[in-house]
Image (tube, rainbow, N blue to C red; front, side):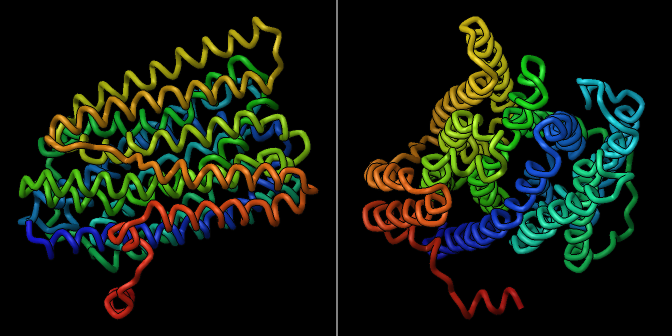
Length: 500
């Protein structure tokens, strides 16, 4: 690969990540009203029931998407002779078929959605989100293949979070929907995001041409997609298994508190997923030319970007954790310990995610087995640690912290194993760690500790910006080289043309 081509790949990765970083900030602004509304109006009990249902709905949707979130890029790269729209519609048809079956099953058998047995008829409508969620994944993946990350930002960072925030407030004040407002708001937000994605998709790909789905081809496509679909579901499941197990050992209120902590911790997670849409197309094109050196370089580059940004945000949210959780409601402060470990889990998981972005193409079966091992390890650790807390006579907050610790240990193990496997396959070193992360974190922790001595409002208003400012200044001066700083540079003329 020429140096110019390598620079183009780096620029594409940086642009995609930059757009999604903006999306992260927009998502943060939109997520805060939802957390406030859900915590203050609905309370931890309702949140716990909603969280339990979401675990099953989104897991089913991920499986029904048949791995197209990451696998579509490879199908489009290999099928250059076919009309691109036809390939995308093949995936959408499969998703609709499997989603319809899943939605019908959970409508008839709602027990997995609501293990407590407490739900209304309107709550059951949440199963209709399964096809909407699956189709949105495919549509946004299709746009990402053409380096259109702006659509993902609009759908995921603007439309969906603001819709669920607004509709959760609206439904609460309607007597007929006040008990089911969270589920209904979520359902509306999913289809609002889907419509946003479809608008750009139809303009970009248009209708299919002479599209004739063949059962034999669809069967082969399904068989090929199963390892990737399972890996996607497992990777997603590691962020939800803790809620499911916690629901078996703890009261709904404790699950609701943990859900809020998880929602806060998922904010830096979005930075990690920000690069997935753009990383897939770049990797598949380099795999086609067997340029393993370039792939290893891209994985390490993006991995460091993710770790650097996630660590800073984790410190900004974790050090003043009591004030952050207290913003949702005083009864949520007990989830501060869980929040700290959940934020740590997202940082250590970054290496696994960027390594998996390549492994799903070069060793999908081995990657699948590692993913299965990860979620099994997480499940065992979660049960063992929660049981230890119960045996020690500790309360509900300690059970939640135990679940978060189990997640961090499992994801850390997965990162190590997947990085070693990828390094052997590519014949290149895979390492996202740099000592500059330590030099930047140390003064940020000191500043954060000082901020915790301030009143709660000042801790949030001044402490969080101060932590981010100190961390950002040190990591920029000590950790970011010329290639890293591409992430924050714009080729204004070129991007203006592309975005017009």
